[in-house]
Each structure stands twice: as structure tokens, then as C-alpha cells.
Amino acid sequence: MSDFYNAFEISPVPGPDDTPPEPFRGIYAMPSFVTIPTTDLAESTAFWTRGLGFIELFSIPGRVVHLRRWAFQDVLMVPAESVPEQASAMSVSFACGLGQIDALVETCRAVRPESVAGPRDTPWNTRDVEVITPEKARIVFTAKRPLDPDSAEARNLAAVGLMPPDAAPGNNDGNGDNSADVEHA
Figure 1 (cartoon, rainbow, N blue to C red):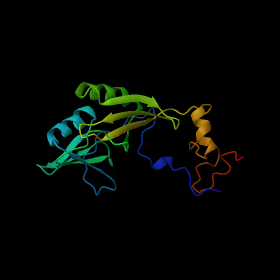
Figure 2: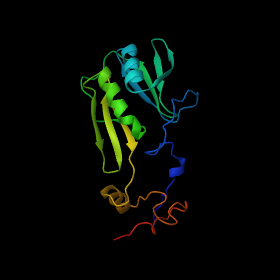
Figure 3: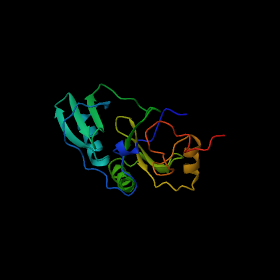
């Protein structure tokens, strides 16, 4: 018995064939956000807007620039005396549409040629692009790939009890019991 259940229907992450949302301009109490120190608010804002597709939601001159892509993808740029010389191993990930990956790579390379690594496909069925920003932040854009039920990725996910919502009868009943969905050893 497991205490988790599939809740794919609440996710704002677009599927491989879905049209990704436009930037969200509403004001809300942010449940989660990233604060990134920068020595140059203008340079950082330009990279994040031109290269990464964020919008400048608002700013308080010299204090903070609030950037956003989709709802709940918020970044606060704040001034700092210095930034690290190398990117940290830690990263922050933002969902994106599968069809946005190539354009993201192209625009980032046009703004900062050495900023992008990837794309690469992951064992958990995403395509990821890693970007190192001028502030030395490690940002990963991650997009869902179509799941082939006969693929190694599908088998790996099933082996740990994770099934797509339509993979097995009764899989999305919300009762927390996925035991019928996965063959246990």
C-alpha cells in the first residue's frame, strides 16, 4: 500500500502536444519563488527576458526586479556586491513546453553563447536544457516527452510505482492505493 496517488489533473505542466501558457501577468501571493543576487540588475534582466523568455513583472529601481514566465514561475533579482565565480551544483528547474526547447537553446546562445548545455533526455522522461546565467545560477528548463508505454522510461517509472493516469484501470481513483497498478516483486 502506498500513500500517494496520481494527480496529473492538477499540474499546470503542459503535455508534449499542448500549447504552453503565455506569461502570466497577475499579482498573487507567491507560494514559491527564487531570489537571485546579481551585480548588474540591467544585464541580468536582459538575459532572463531575452534569453529565457521571462517578463519583467515590476521593479523597484535599485532594489528588486520581479521576473516571471508562467504562473508560479517567479524570480526576484536583487542587487549584490559580488556573485560566485562558478555556478553551484544546486539548480532550480522551470517547466516548459517540449516545442519550446529548441528556441530556448537558440535564444540563450544568441545572448550568451556559452550559457547552454543540452538538450538531454532523462530517465524520468523529460527533455532538459541547463542554462548558466550571468549571476552563475544553474537553471534547468524541463519538458515532458511523450511516454511510450513500451520504453525503458515507462518500465523504470512503473518499477517505482509511478504510472501515467490512463495506464491502468482504477489508477487515478485518488484513494492512495496504487498496488493494483504495479507488479510488485
